[in-house]
Length: 184
Image (cartoon, rainbow, N blue to C red; front, top):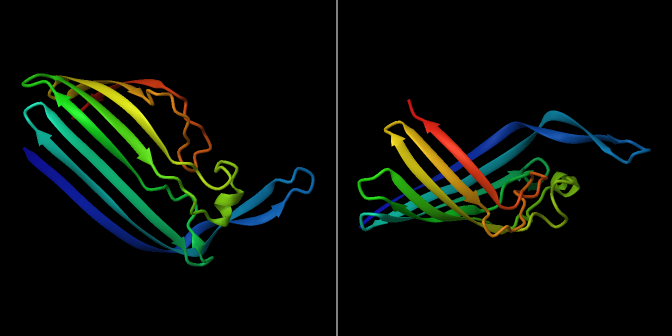
């Protein structure tokens, strides 16, 4: 049995952050117009962590978690469009001495209701914030050569409705993916 893990923390101050400022509203259509300016100061920090546990020759469990906190210190409010706390939990099977692998994983995202005034006006973000969600996903991989890999996947296999925070697009439902990777 082998356990692997890592964590990193980041912190930064942004001075001259490009921020959209309300420049006016169309009196007929009621649409807001914005202008971008280097006016804001912000603090941004977060944590990213991951780990895996190999148990036996064929099986491993893994997880990743990331958290970001942003604050517009100029306006004393949350920084716009900061993603919610989210992560991945998965279980993977590897063919012993073979090229095949199969994994089942869940992508989990907490609701995001820590919104700036800009987020509240943004039609891409639902009233009250973006709801949390969990998707169940499965992938099969085949290592064709040392530097070529083929991956087939089914994402959101239970066809749950969700929206990535700030994207403005609801998830497509269940979807299939096909990927080819060439390493140099």
